[in-house]
Amino acid sequence: MKLWGGRFEGTPDELMERFNTSIGFDWRLWAADIEGSMAYARALERAGLLTADERDRLIQGLEAVAREFEAGEFEIKPSDEDIHTAVERRLGELIGEVAGKLHTGRSRNDQVATDLRLYLMWEIPGLRQQLIGLQEAIVTKAEQHLEVIMPGYTHLQRAQPVLFSHWLMSYFWMLRRDRERLDDLEKRVAVLPLGAGALAGHALGIDRHFLADELGFRTICENSMDAVSDRDFVAEFLFWAALLQTHLSRLAEDLILWSSAEFGFVELDDAYATGSSLMPQKKNPDSLELLRGKAGRMVGHLVALLTTLKGLPTTYNKDLQEDKEPLFDALDTLKLALPVAAGVVRTLKVNAGAMAAALDDALLATDLADYLVRRGVPFRQSHELVGRAVRRAEALGLPLRELPLAEFQAISDAFESDLYAVFDHRHSVEARDSYGGTATAAVRQQIERARAVLHEQA
Image 1 (spheres, rainbow, N blue to C red):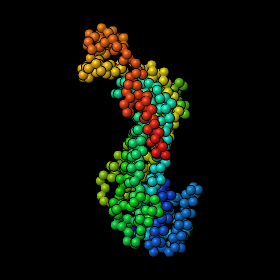
Image 2 (cartoon, one colour):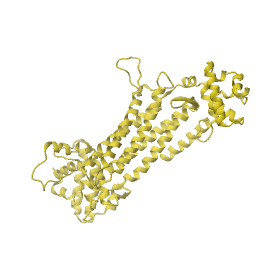
Image 3 (cartoon, helix red, strand yellow):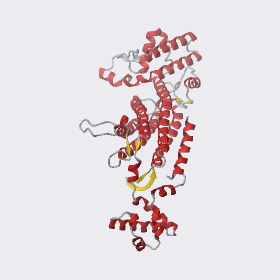
Image 4 (cartoon, rainbow, N blue to C red):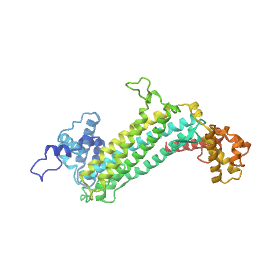
């Protein structure tokens, strides 16, 4: 069945038919398409374009089509160009000619835009809950290992001692921003295009505000030309998905490094690791590597759609058919990635002993500079003096705490015998008690704030 063709004498080339067809991927819009069509049937009756009986027959027929999809019994035929064609073709088979009235004043241009928005509106709550699930796993793991100290890193070089829980909570706040962005973009998804027609609007008195209320949209598109061509909401969602997957990738990269024998800070549960087909000893962090690898795919989806959109003239163009596969794949990927990431965190084994063994005196160099600052030495000067002490200790092959006092005082007489009290990793951590710092009390407060955020989200 074709929804067009009276103006044509010839038929499309077979390859053109295959090239043009989208039913292979847009079939998953069936529930949104049927929901939109039922609301449209009610709106047509309100506008005097259908009798009450015709409206009811259309709705009953659409409900029957929906049951076939739900039962896995709907048969897609070679002539079904897209999901709209398939549903209308089957509706006609079930209820006869009255099915032809359903498309009155409607274009596939406003229909598909409505379907896609409605589909995404239905998907967002599930993603939100999975995102919250990962946040909950992070907070719980941080609580369980609140006081474990580890080296903190910048440039992948040991920097200062921090709490493992502090590192882990940094991802909670990244994910909170992701949650806020999702809530914000949801408003721009829930804007109704239906009733815009092909591009110029509806000529037969349809009530678009009624349609918005029926379908759960927050508002309606203000301009019919913009309504059918706007895919900002898809691009925005793909940006959100790419950034979220980037955050998951960063979490994965940290844990991949730390699960290696060279670090040994953590161990993945067997449920989230795989083995080698050749080397019996291997325990590979494949769950994390896939979380990291999917980031490139997500960024690619965003770039692909933006590249498609950038040169399009006003209103609908068939190029917009390219919006669905990236969106569907992003949704499918995140619906696996988020619970996998949550599972990794929940079951992660933390090796506090290995973390403690990796703590060295160089991590306390900043504390030594702070010691001089408290004695009145300007920070820029104290930074230089401690750097010289570190270099001297390295030259002598000594840990910084074993550098003799005479060596320190040869660098500056501001160093006195009490400097050695600085060499305490726990003291260093607890000294950083500013809001958002790594001290135990500060991290405990972070966790309390995070719990409050989760409570609000729930």
